Figure 1 (cartoon, rainbow, N blue to C red):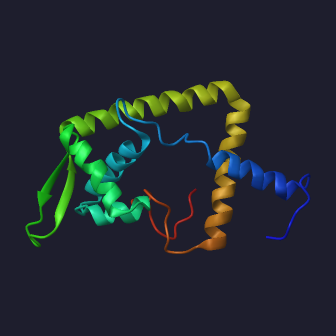
Figure 2 (spheres, rainbow, N blue to C red):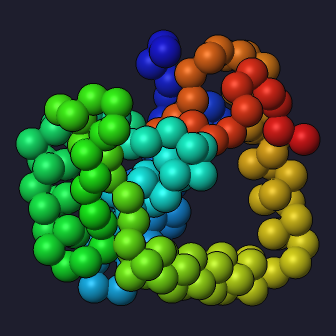
Amino acid sequence: MQSQPQDSLSYRLLSAFFRFLRTPWHIVAAPGLTRTETGILIGIERSSHSGKPLRISDLSHIMRVSPPTISQHINSLEEQGFVIRTQSKDDKRAVHLELTEKGRETLRQQRAVLEQNINQLAEYLGKENTETLITLLTKTSDFFFEKDNTEHSPPFMDDEPKNKTPK
């Protein structure tokens, strides 16, 4: 990207994007857990919905964190009763990750807090600004999906259809 004057519209838009990216609006920590641990639980849950067993290496790739770092977090989550490891029936060397009932309940609580935050944001913005934000975010997504239109998906979005523009 060429250097833009700091008061140009495109520079201000880029600055706003970067500022928004630094806000952790979408990763609300579950009660008693860090955002990273919560992200791990979300990754395990999403994988279980796809029917594909999840390994530490898969989670490491999705979260863009080294396998030893993920392993440390998994050890902690397992000790706390949120996650269990099971040996693969097909490959005895592979270990799959699953949520316990405690892990699933913790994510239900986390989602309730996230929903509350979004409701508070909508109230803060007001109906008209919320509708405008929805329209602008949708148009922004459409623009980048149409421009890129690749097989790649962002982290934790593997359960979304590939090459499909949101409506």
